[in-house]
Amino acid sequence: MLIGEHDALVVEGDSGALLSAPDGGILHVNGDLNADLESGGFHEIVIRGNVSSGATIRADGFLHIYIGGDMRGRIETTDSSKIWIDGDFTGSLATGNPSTNLYVAGDFSGAVAPHHDASLFFLCIDGYASHDLISSIASIGYTVFNASVGVSDVAAGLYPNGSGRRQTTSGNSYSRWCVLSQRDGAEP
Image (cartoon, rainbow, N blue to C red; front, side, top):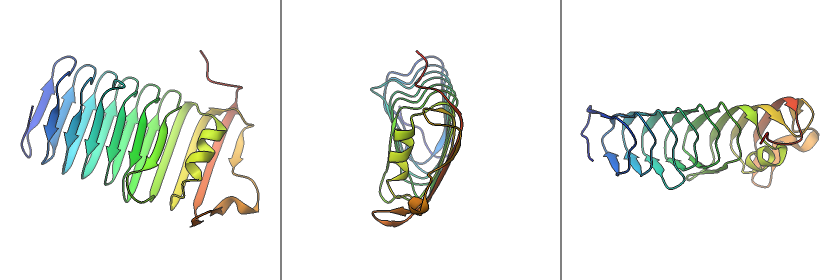
């Protein structure tokens, strides 16, 4: 389904077909997203359910996404985005430029990489994320990477420790994250 600039589309229920808004607009799916979604320009995307593992959200332009369930698929952004996920994040994210803001209410075990160049990435996780996963995201070399992790497998505190915390193999990176509490792993 294709919508035009400044249009809005509401899908009542699950979406199993490609949705496309190349010139921006408002897309609401009052169910699960089970197929790809493509958008450009300035846009708002609301998925009230889950994003399935076979679905990809591709977005050029400035974007706000809300996902009311779990994110199992892929999000690819090229420009600035603000993404809110009310469930667990087990999918993947290609971050945009100049900035990406990601909030995850549940546990985080997904993959993150820049779409093109690593720029600014801000991450807030209310649930569990392993220290190794957060460290691997920091090692990508984002210009700025800040995160708040509700629960991890390391002691509560500010990370990384040590004098080399602002250095990566590609130069300076201002990466810092805080862990609020410790647990050995994600709850079943």
